[in-house]
Length: 328
Length: 275
Image 1 (cartoon, each protein chain N blue to C red):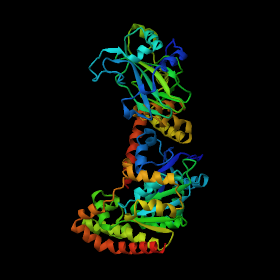
Image 2: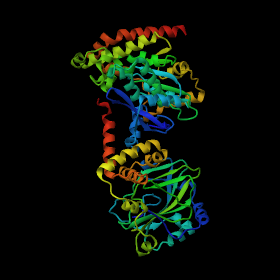
Image 3: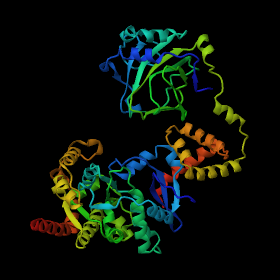
Image 4: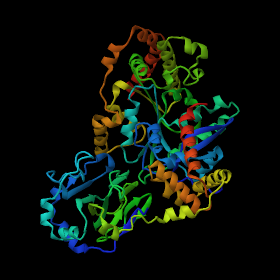
């Protein structure tokens, strides 16, 4: 590419040319990413033949040059979570603020976070620089009033927290979690990639390939969650983070999370968030606490696996969270 | 065949608008095909299938049924509209006022039941419009001014976007083709694009493939080409538009090459997870 003009183009995929990662770009000119998940925004774009046929492919160096030429909105907060715990609700509510651009579970970010598994020759410094450039390209200011970028990562990206912290040491983040039995009941019912053996490298969760496919589903799920809860707990000791339990939602969004991220929503904005939390069923974010039902639905296997692997860490998280709340 | 043609007569915009004012705000009804639009697209039936007062469907309930058409009370009120309809010396089917509010869009679609071949065509008479109204037929803009009379072959993909601050209101008339209408509209003339495509020398397969890749590079560089290609959602139209713009920019290639490249691009998008 001789003349670098990627205005209104966003990264849609990390493709590999042998051991070299490349960025694929798609045209996108809307003021935000309105769908609950970034992948849904991309799929909508791909309904247009132009966007399918005229995707562009550039090097990582071009991505970095673009970040220099056209820096995105600086990230104001990251959302890490254990899945099935209200993190989409939180992100959607923050996304109602006019000053906010939210990005939810963007596959290019996820792919880049695992780039060193594919090519160990990639240095940590290069990866950090690429991550910053990728976030900058996805987080271009799309409307004048946008000044805060929030990124919700995939649940399993929590195990890469140190990589993300290295690239963005200054960005505050929250870790959202929930009673492990409730997460497991929900996650096994509608499985994300992390709940499907081999969909992600088992090594991410400290498992060998063979054991990951041989152990019962409940055991596999519990060990994945253990790794995610553990990463959240360990990351928390590094600071700049806030622990949020599902039980605190949705009020925690306006009372704890927004202030923690430096947003001070006005009465009108709080009202918009409240409405979004109540009646936006099309965003599938309608919030109905369902802990009781989830607990009832849990099988013995789910309970045992959760007890064995995840509860000990959950209890440590709770102890930290509640102690912090006592102090304030 | 031509997809658009401005007839040689026109109507008085002031008198059209004076009749328009006789329709009350509450008498507009939303367009029946809600999947086709975003915002506010509504209408008033001046003439339609008998017994279906102010139902915006231009036809009978089923494609086979050929209903009787009758004027409505709205047309009774509007004497100039009556004169306008009388100007067409052919059997009239439906006549509707269609209003697209500021900021609204009609998504790209084809009206399959219309067509010269089927003996039924649609005429548009803009009553109120604005320079920011974008009507695209076959991905090419049609600029229609108030009082003008336009034949549009809407069996082809078309879309409308009202970027202006006032509603666009057209009188839309469906009529049967007869000798008089054939004397007014040269239906069977080739369009400019068809003539141009016929004149283009054939390219051998190898050159065609190379030219297509050159064109892809060109599109990455040129925002004007991007703008021209990215709005259409109709696959067939998109393929022929890519070929047309390639030809116009010195990269001739076959539609088949675009088709193949699009299939390949879609496959690689779906298979991006498989590593």
